[in-house]
Image 1 (cartoon, rainbow, N blue to C red):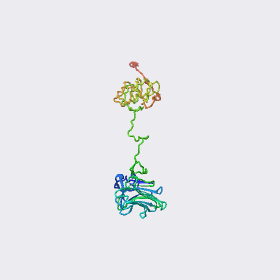
Image 2 (cartoon, rainbow, N blue to C red):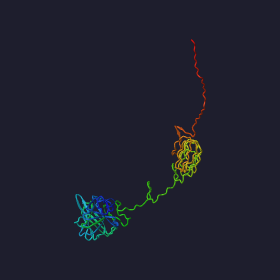
Image 3 (cartoon, rainbow, N blue to C red):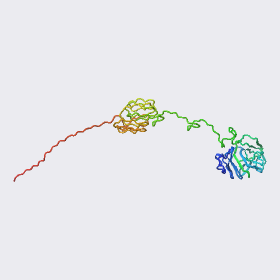
Image 4 (cartoon, rainbow, N blue to C red):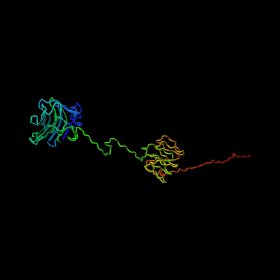
Length: 430
């Protein structure tokens, strides 16, 4: 069990409640009376502390100890000292009501002492331990006995609030601390005196020590619910996500890539030499396009990461040439379709001829005149590693032009003649 609260996540001037006392401050209190208030603080008590006035208190209750030993720490400042002995920290037993299990008290001369109840004998005391208006760290250990004679109490007073040791301490063993383990610790008011609390804590795990030790390398508290986050050392880690703990992003070295599309990491686009071709793929990261050996072919596929263009032989499929320094000339052939020229500074002029349609030239500084050819339409080239034969209506299309049908006609005269009609008649005399 460990509960701690630094009050640092509150707002100065705001009343402390069970709802706003947790979060960044630590473990929320589950019992609050009156109107305890967040106030500004300085030094190691900054930024905030808790001011407890008349009828105010904050408490943790209904926790369970793993054993019979309870450790308590509180930083407290008394605006003034009381005129008579009175308590400001209480241990209670909640079982069918509230009964006292212990009281930490202060006297008019600044003596700090502990009793089981306000009217029983003092078990331990440290005389002249506190001064009005100054912070002091108090730590208390209470061992609840199994009998009325085997309990124990230890009390430490630290005028230098962040030191690890002190000479102001008192201990008692074999004393009556009760036989029922308490389940509430409350930080309560002194009548007519304003108290300021900070970095309060309770635990059954051992002595708590200072909230902000002078030597941060010495671990004096458990890791959970810490008032102050310790620095986390950086490590080089291999992650599958973003880079971790790197001051700068390492440069990415250029790599030749066989992509089909726009040029990647190329200084300039190389002009495409004018040729009668079907389709020229986009040039990527090359000084110039290599000439392609003339051949009667159907389709030229796009460039793909080859060190050298292989000679094109008669056949159906043509391999792809890429990343070459110079484009090889293509011998004029009757072709079906000219694909789009990509990434060229200017579209090369196509020699005029009888043709139907050439696809538009893209990404060029100047559109050249498109010559016409009497051709059929072949579908656009797709980004395949190997060109496939083009078919039309189930038949392969060759580079030969279609058959021409010739005809001729001559005029012919049609002869005719006509004679005038004759009417014959005769008469007789009777």
